[in-house]
Image (tube, rainbow, N blue to C red):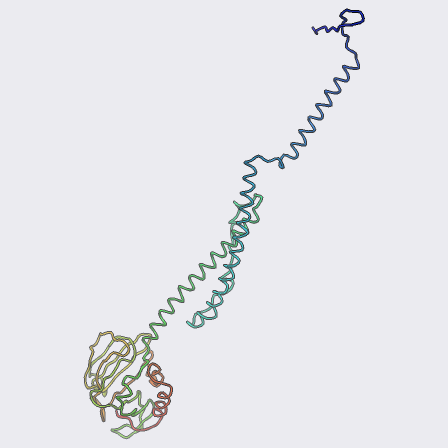
Length: 325
């Protein structure tokens, strides 16, 4: 039961019953309805614009996201610089290092190849910054692969350089008798007159005239494979295996300063000039072999002759005279 309300009428000095008017009830109802509609509209506006209304935690996460995007941009710039540097290294590798060491250049397709097959970046899809993250990951993966390829290439170059250094140390490169100890360069490589038969015969080495007992030096690093007098005509002789297909022979020695199996270095004293075997006078008969074939020793004195000294020796070696053995 609704409460009955009264009001005091000052004219009649009595309480009168309050009778609600129909229009007022309707007004109150409409006002309540309007309030409800306005409240709903305001709530709708708040809901629509909710992304712009951020909690402290959301603001912190947004700052972290912006910082992450900045770091990705900086990372991409650094990768761009690294790509430029790596490209320069690859250019020197292909056009300088590998050319010098006679190695085939690495094709550009092999250096910059991507990754085929399955999608490696599927787990990175579906996020607001997926494109940025995926592109950065791809560049980083390709850059890493390029570094691996270049690293392997440099390992190969280092190996080739080591082999080249060993080759340069092994190749016979000095005159086996010092110039100050030479009487003359008696005979060179080619057809010469045999001192015993006087017939024209091919002379396979170079003869260095020098007094008996003059020091003879190894012309390159290697292992002594012979130091005996059992080869016909050579007398006491030494043969050194330098590796890489090179051998050198020193014949008609007075005596040895080494033994078979011994490892020697360029410039080591290995024996002394003599006239043993088929020899007309004290001298050193010197030969060089490449892959088992005799070659002209004139091309193997760059280690201790000046251009002028080499020119004089070349001229004398070309004279068709009489050999000493």
